[in-house]
Image: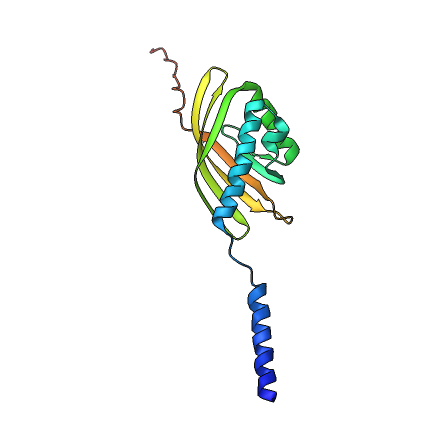
Length: 160
């Protein structure tokens, strides 16, 4: 009888341990959630809805725009996107790859946009983090143009 109780205790203990182990993330489920968030953000860009454009960013997120200093925090990101959207006629982006591990995920993609009279194409990397409430939010975002920089002309100097 004593051996049976020991075996029962071991089976119950092992069951509790195995059930409490954290399961690896389901990358396809996370990707679907991120794609849905991206779709809402694309709609917000089309409507020039600043709150919608920045709704996916965590409170302490950092954006690294091209030719500009880093922008950190929801309020500063909103101000940056407001300025950017004032020049934006069209904007769309598309995920080309995605992966997740633990509480972090990343997407890589391309964008196209028209800013004033300039048509731009570029690429981006966005890092998502699962928050305490289970929601995935952007914690880091970098984007930059694929267009060649404008040619700089060096003024000629007069020869002596």
